[in-house]
Length: 430
Image (cartoon, rainbow, N blue to C red; front, side, top):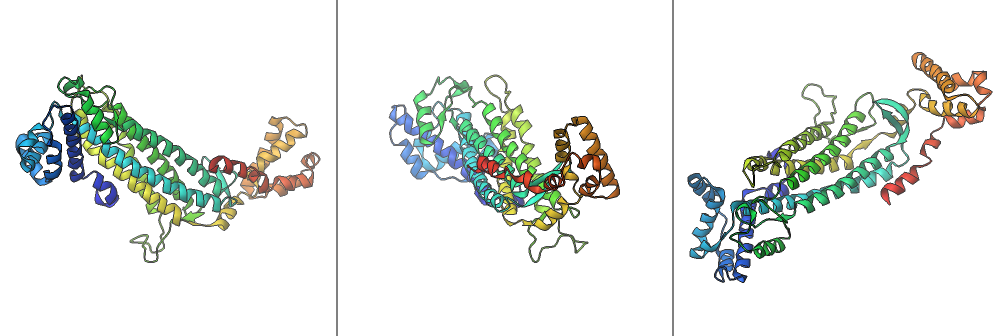
């Protein structure tokens, strides 16, 4: 996590102050439940709530001696609240606090990421409708295939981010659990109703069975979803990078008045923001393998997962948030060149209509194999000699006996490729 690729909103969630504040919320909620159950004196939770202050520096000082973060935290709270604080943490174990708090941080982060996705969906919808009928070439393997519209390209991204939103909603639900079950998860020294109260108070669900730790398959799922979303971010970013290449130049990232593209070459306008997104997506995806490996802990618990989560927790969430916000900005401000799209569409002089010519020949009685061979031979000649496919075919009497001039002109037209755009848009934007 570095300042350059992070926003304050997410940094605050993963700050030491917020972490310890959540720890305190967990301890106070548990104390409230214990008071109701008559396990500790009444008034403990209210005194702690009133007097406790988070002092990160002091906690670190204590931890440097005791070598235990939760004990250091509790000691610091006791220094501020007095003797009543001795009733905190009764029958609890460190994982009860750490795991429940980590899940709260993930939920807090996830909700911001959902808001980021909503903003991307909004701008994609706006741009897709704006360029709904803007013709451009569809490519497969990087090679010109058949006509599409730029709006369809954006609609595809929109549908993908709709799926990402659903996935993230489910991942947040998956991670929204609380465990206050004590050592090895048996509730031997703590009433299960304490866990129930803490979960309700903090907006979580009770973990059905914890082994002193909340099962890490939940966390692995959450980070896997972040990685999938990052993959979608990179998919859009790579498309922008390809379309901004000089020989393509169908669009470009917004380039501000005083922006410089290269320290050496004044003419350069580079897709640096999209390239940056590709790199950030790699970082988010790098969290998945460690998260998956955290699932298999020794027996009821070990702490091999702890150091991993202290890294990937803030890093993956903060990085993805930054990437999503940057992507939304790129999509909103990108400059589109419809004339260049048309120019590229016509670059191969009609070769992109080869399939329709072949299909029309099959309707006249020729086999698919014969039709394919005839059209392919002309396509190869046109490509090598820079000829127009329509003109070449028009001069072949054997073909024109099977396809009328009127029909041939209709084939070499974009309209047939766009006849179902409304249908696709209704499916996507219903």
